[in-house]
Length: 606
Ligand code: ADP
Ligand code: MG
Image 1 (cartoon, rainbow, N blue to C red):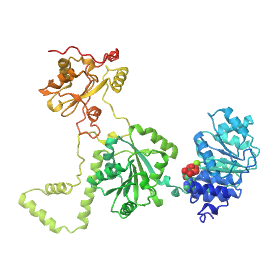
Image 2: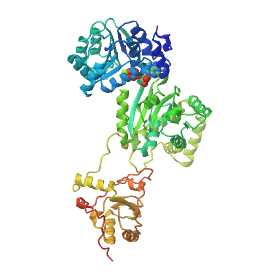
Image 3: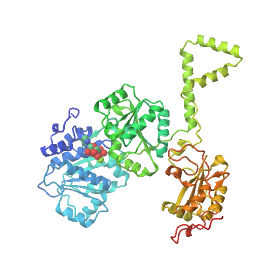
């Protein structure tokens, strides 16, 4: 009976409800709605099971509204929901669906809200009450919630209420409301405990179960990767290389410019990639989608707007290169994969400061997002080698190699080299365009940087206590210390000691005013007071370390952000080096600048 319902007006709902739905813009009832609404309108109890995001709210709210008598002010519908947020959400949904029903009132009640306010609102009356179990119990006991006129009870997110330990409260409520009523129980899963409650309190319920395959989200494997912006491109290409079921991807970024830039970078690395953004004509956009379908392209880098509604079944991966601003965008994005019942993958890049967004998405979709483990360089190399060996085996099996065997035999004889050596040389030639080994950049492997755990730190020198470090950080943040660049680095054989010595002696800066020193290949950075007088800077410009003029100047933001010898954003790779902390540094940090007079150098030595 449900398969034939394609429009809401095929359901026997009152005109004001249909009007409201038209205004909201729902076109077709979702499967759970098509299956449940007729039963509920006919007065049956319902046991409904469907994934999150499948439209369960409207499945019970629309028929409930249909039965509400606006003339009666006492609650006719009670919805129990597990959390305050969900109670509010459901109440808002009722309000929207009832927007063409003048005089309609829905009231959310939940713990934490002022009792006085709630009592007043309850006295004023509401047709529908949506509440958390604890607070509803409270009101029933106080007799502030009169449920004598109740006709419909809905248990929404029943498994969640079970998980949160509300099941006893729920049963208590079920026993304290009129037995003559319609009851609907909705849940994303159907654990035994919920089934038992249903058996006990529902009368011959119609069971409706919507298979997970029709709910977009559930066929999609969701993972996240903790990764700083500077490493995203490397992480993306590594993912593209190692994901076994990779076929095609849509990569989401935040801006139109970023779509162009990233698509170009991917192309430069040999991927069939193109951008898709709102600046492109409709015709161009359609061509990109067509090319993705016919495998001319494998990767489309898109903005939210441009990718809305794309339906290309071969998209195996959605990469959230930039985290979406809200959960709704996330759901829309990942819905571009896992189409037509296929499995899909959604990978979310989370920069260190975006963790709260990750948690928000997990909470709202009520789906855990697993940590993606990025394979190490070695693992990638192993994989390439295995694929290469596989290719060679296939050629051995399927090709006629007699001509080549002669060539090699001739070479073996003429040059007196072994078959092994010849084979190795050929392997070298064959992999030149796509090397089997991962180049050692001297930088830490992004697989480690993206581990999702904080990076292991170098052991802390004992003399700096936490308070001092915080103090120094604060000073740095307040601009009391600044990072300067000097043109002397490792290649000049300079040591931190040399640098401190030169600065202290030449400019007369006490060593306690000299902060962290980071040595890089051809330069270094030094933390010094931000308010260095000009004449001191002049002296330091000419000062030398290892015959090298320091040529001191304020470090650029990139240089300043390079820490501990790691490359800064866009920085060239310097080998990871342990930071240097000068002996006794900042022992007096507490006194630094306390007089507010800024930095005062001793008289420089002549
Ligand atoms: P569930 O309770 O199953 O998790 P919701 O009822 O919260 O799902 O609905 C999820 C989203 O789908 C909401 O944004 C809702 O407005 C929207 N929605 C519900 N029914 C329809 C429909 N028939 N057409 C379009 N969108 C719908
Ligand atoms: Mg819901």
